[in-house]
Image 1 (tube, rainbow, N blue to C red):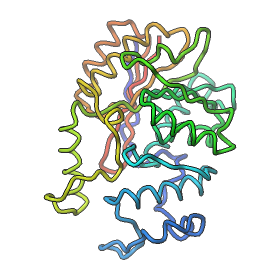
Image 2: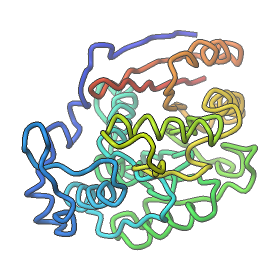
Image 3: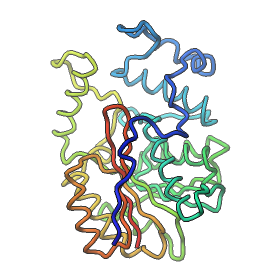
Image 4: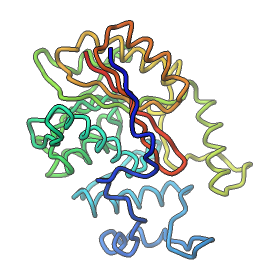
Length: 305
């Protein structure tokens, strides 16, 4: 098994990310006028911004970004579902594109022949939206939560560019990840996943309070999450380490149907036991790719058989 760790020096978004520059609020408001009501001056620079602790403001910003940069006219979310930061999600897609290019002399594969499995697509359907627009890839989105599955399906149905290119499938068994989703004989170039990070709802709320404090909100206020997220999106028993461990074990069964398996790993301490598990299941190659966005570091764990 070969193991490599790369991209340590990157301290900003991927070079192909459309959101490298600061948000152009004038342009965004011109295309999605609803955003204008949420614009406020930055208290340090007086430049326009939004209150990132206000979920409605974050949602309006996302709608503006999706309409402006990704040709998405309809994008709604249930009140308690995750409202993702789009630049960071886009980074994952671009690093996956680099991964797929490695075996093609550095040329990124594009078009409908590239098939991606998004494990836990969520109500927001954000990875298929970005991946289809940037590279014209086809996606299967797997989702355990029925309402999230229904919402993602509605986003696909109401955006012409996604129809016939994104297939949202319901996972009926919470013990399964790939089983019931990958059909017999079906092939994928890569699977992606943003796993549940926390191990309990209590841990979710503690993190939310820290976020609110960092955003300048009073620590005694009711902890409303600015990016939202329901239970299945945010936590599972054992947290991300157990979830990814189960994914690794199940990936063995589908090693001939998925070329590359990938997942985000938020906690650095989880990498070592996960790599040991990958050795145990005889993964042929393992990579750890660091994605650095300002002070935040997110890791991609990548393996194949």
